[in-house]
Amino acid sequence: MPRSDIADPHISLLRAARKPAARFAALLIAGVSVLIIGLQAMETWRGRDLRLREAEVATANMAHALSAQGETAIRVTDTVLSSVVTQVEREGWSGPPGERLGKYLRDVVAEAKEVHGVLVYDADGNWVVNSLDHAMQGNNADREYFRFHKASGRRSAHVGLPILSRSTGVWVLPVSRRINRPDGSFAGVVVATIRIAYFAKLYEGFDIGKQGTIVLARDDGTLAYRRPFEDTLIGKSIAGGLVYQQYKRTGPVGNATLPAQLDGIVRLYSYRRMDSYPLLVIVGVAKDDILSGWRSSAGQLFGGIGVVVLMLALVGTRLVRQIRIRDELEEELLSARERLQERNAALTELAERDGLTGISNRRHFEEALQREIARAARSGKPLSLIMLDVDYFKKYNDHYGHVAGDNCLQQIAAALPVSLDRPSDFPARYGGEEFIVLLPETSGHGAFQVAERIRSSVCALNIEHAGNPASVVTVSLGVCTALIDADSPPAPEALVEQADCQLYEAKRLGRNRVSIAAQASTALLQTA
Image (cartoon, rainbow, N blue to C red; front, side, top):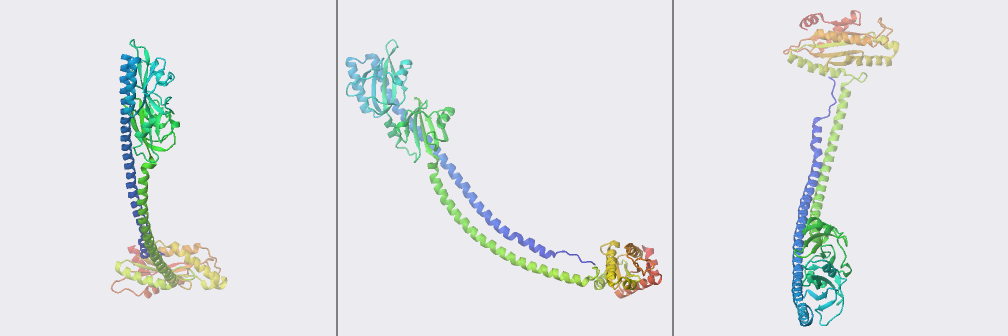
């Protein structure tokens, strides 16, 4: 039978089993590396979030403490103001009451470190009593706090804009109260000033990092103090800053991570407005400062992880290289095996194929016939042979030449498979101009029909043949059919000889016809 060019399945299985090895090792190493890095990255990121949450709590606590300390300082100052207002409204500031009031103010300034000075002004803004050791003349009617009290009947304390003291030349934050006459009309103002430097000293003890900041501002956004301290910033407005706007949106207490208006540094801010006074305390710690320690430890950790991953990669690379070398060697062996099989197949093909026509040769046919006799003996089904010969072929060669004769045989050989129905039908060149067809499991009737198709196909080729009465190349065919006895199977030569006899019978009867043994024909036609 014709040989099928199918690759060795064993080699295909070996290749399929081997190919994933290097890839699997590489993917495994890469996966482990990614897993290690991923887990460490997750843990490190959790550490970062923890640092930020801890910093948020710390800055909120710091803002609360600073707000409480500042409020305490202002409350002490306001207590002094309240007592002064009560005394002035009851006794006035002239004569002995004024002298006693001056002494009281000097004692207050000496005892209360946060109080820079206390002054009393009349309704026109003139200095009438102060905490200095000597009398001074001056007028503060132009001050914001004086104008506020003169225009407003409010008796509570007022925290004014930060100012540069006219008596001492230092920056102070004024806290003032209104003085009324018995009829409720405006009589003057008493003001106590707190050194801005007092807040600087108060805030110095808090750790806010290298780029941190602490801000004290009025509720309208006027800056009273900022750490790091710059006196040029006192009195400036921070109302346009993102932190102040956040405060206005969210209320008196809050947190936010935002860039600063003044220097653009991103900080984690906590802000808090004093409960009793219109002052806002803002504490900001630079995000870089918060995360500097985290970055350092994360860098060390990832450095260590990098070393581990690098070592893993080096070991893995060596392993993958070894696997690839092994695969290359195996591939060379498999390729050599394939080439050997291909060469063997080619040799087998040369041994089994007829060199001229390309169909199976006599040797291959005899091997197939031996197999089919054994199979027919087992199955009990008929086995048929068709022997055919080109009519007047010697005349054809003599007239047209041997090259044309070879071409004629090639065309006839090509027409044989077209006339066959099944892959198991086996055509071969038997020798010279003789061909033979093996038909397994085929009755005489079926073999006769196949032989007729072959004869018709050859005629249909219309190969010119001047030496043939039919004017074209024709063939004569002999058919032999046998039921094989399993106990005494016939020799292959006997079947071929019987087909050959029928071939000569066809030639004797005039050629271009099919001849089948009468006994076999009758028996098998009845069973068909």
